[in-house]
Length: 200
Image (cartoon, rainbow, N blue to C red; front, top):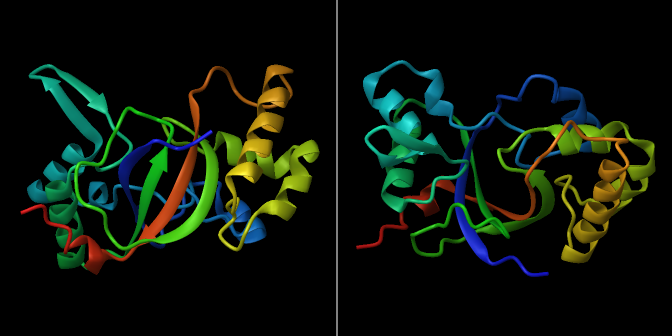
């Protein structure tokens, strides 16, 4: 298996944990897709912030039809978003995401990035898989395979975990209904490097 698509950026509030994730972050050093609340400008009520927040989450198909997106795939929108976060002194963490999910594709140039590891997660992004991982004892040995970011360092390791998770899911032992899950390769990117990724 290979990962074919550069999906784009997830912008997370640096200090804002999703409700219920604190113990998982503390115990397992989890810094993955679900470790921070995303779209930090959604917390501000200025027209500019609300507009950027909406554009970051929704892609317009027509005047009355919109699709929810998980990642920012447009470089101009990304730059505007990061600059606005800096103007409002919002501490952010930037993840660049590659995966086998083809619903969103980054349209900008490559940027300097630090490889963090691999994760098996859902679209839309939520904490179902990591929560199952934290309590379901047959998956516990896989914690020995994660790195200092709570991610799998190799594609082989995340594939083994994915297969084990799917088998338990199919038996009805974990999970919460149908889900669309993918393998993600995560990188961390510095905001200043993002601001230099203009396409012109």
